[in-house]
Length: 359
Image (tube, rainbow, N blue to C red; front, side, top):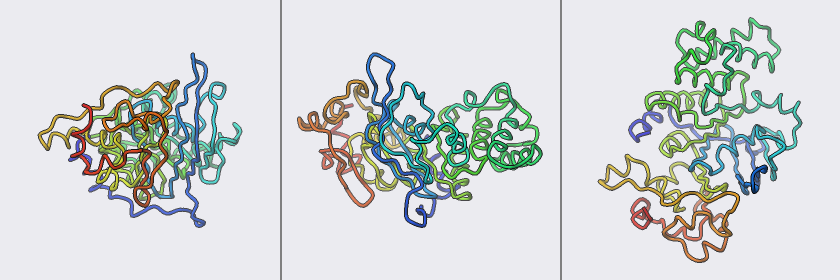
């Protein structure tokens, strides 16, 4: 997404005035030292390693990074959507007071959709093709709310109007394949909001959409957050979208959060080489300066054979021997800004420091 288009999100919907916690100050999402390991292949894969993340009420936190960095795995763990037999979990995940990792199937069925719900990346795959969209929404409402069929249908109609689906009564009777990509994504958002969840999990909600529809969906999410007081965890590859939509950004690499801070702080003063490289890879920012588009050499490491030190060291121009031998701890750069790097000094100067990166 271009910077010009991304800027329209903030202009049209407005940034949140600021998140707030519960009355006792506790975050609505509190993840502590989460580890997720998948077995079943030739070797166990540690997809998430020691992730800690807090989200306050009314706050949007974006998880960004390359494919395989652990973003979607973290998100899906918050709904316990991984196959139980092949997944080993560690740490703690609390959402609105619920200890998610210890919940049984019955409790999870009550929790999903009502406390936390998800907007999936590809709604054509997430929606059931043999039922109309309206049937799927009303079923979700009746599962969690004491309403009859007519009341659930009226609620579904209100949701379609809220997410600005034209001819909502007719679209409720449509099957997923009869709707355009942008309309399906709006229907997916309506389904996620059907039971008034407190936390909305958005897994790459704009990836399959063209640029204009992306902006419309991002503006819609921002308006819904403002109007409903939602807390949103937003997974994206697009750092431009994250900067415009999120209050805070957590950058993930090889299953770890390597940098975390406010969107404003990360774009002005990135302190991890990976964050800086992601910023430099934005086409608009590079072309405006007459520079070549920055790319990150190499590929992410094999998660079944992670190196002993920093996982980004082999792709980082500033890496030293210590980086390859020692797993760096998070360093506090400023209030609410941390980076997991031994060379946080190297990125001072922002985009100008990209000249030192391998491209």
